[in-house]
Length: 204
Image 1 (spheres, one colour):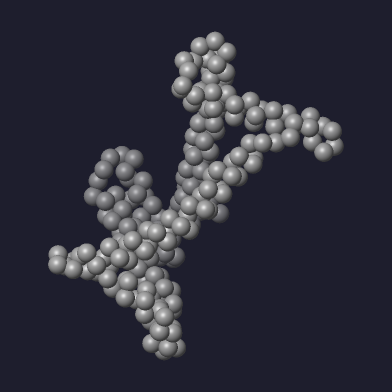
Image 2: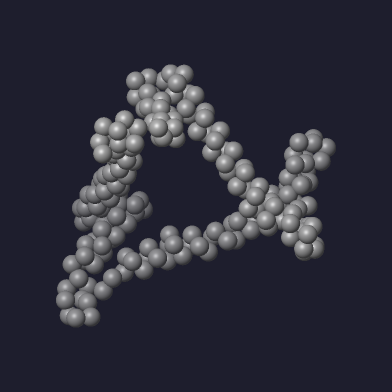
């Protein structure tokens, strides 16, 4: 008997028991999942980050420059002291500044420049074919922007274009919702397949 599959199957049923109502079995499985996830993350972080990239290079290989992040990390624990808690602002400021400096260019490229680049497509391709999808993207872009143009009242031509923009947004929200539902259904199908094959051996 595969005891791993038995435990996984029982925990899966415990999680799905929430569909009936909130109960102690579900709370136990949820707490076990959270505890195991945190424990696994802590052990992985300790081994791959603290030991492999900090303590061993610093004390065994003599890379003294690594003492700087070690000291900054220790300063984070000054939050537990009311008198020394101000010292924790130093590593927090460095961490937030470095994070913002690394994230802002990446987010600007991924969420702004690439979106603008993909929104501007030639209406005639290189082989002299009309790019209908480019026309749809252009119409959706301009009409959606018109919907969010609040400096003028949405009447007349602007109101008609803004209404078309709402249709494009509804299509987008519907497609996003459908994609989310399909991903959740895929997860559900995977768990049901596991219960029927590996756990109950109903299907081979």
